[in-house]
Image (cartoon, rainbow, N blue to C red; front, side, top):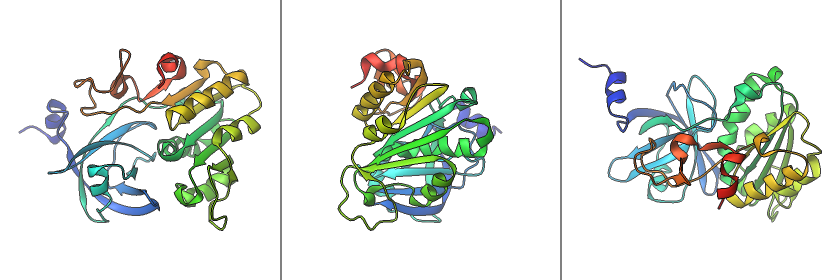
Length: 273
């Protein structure tokens, strides 16, 4: 009889059933779940989550642990709205991991600049947790996060420890209620980067967020001496298969699901939209 691993290898679309052992509402439109799943994966990779009769959606992994997988999910459609109704103890169909990862092993000894906007902060949480586990291997680490308002800030509890370990900078498009547990300035994350990043000396930048944020941040970094090879981004494209069969996620000859979603900036610079 074939083993479970052999069956999955023959059919890459075959999902596994995993239990949710943690659920937390992060913001008005997003939540984090933790799956009881020991998955060998890298920071920046993603999985597919599915619910029978509803559908399947790709979700970036927002943790870095050999013991579990965390997902921060934004409610934007039928599948993610249905996932939001799950609770601790429920089970979810998942398959993966897919895609490339941030090459953190090759960046040891570098100063790391991490820039995230909105839900783009979620995949970067895995990058941060990787660095936390190997803190002595990296130089200075600066975090720049931008959110719509304080109410939409992600990972408020983790921010407390990140602030102690790294140089943490947070901005909000608008601050209507200043009495919140997450503090920052009013403005855009690009302004934080412009004000606080001085040069490109021994540095690498890791970006994830809306395309316009990535483009403007990369332009700022280039003015400060960064080459395109010092910048890594996570590209977003609609995906259905995750293994390069459907062609939905192609960007000028590159499959986001296979060649990405993590790219070095010079690989996609001319095709950002």
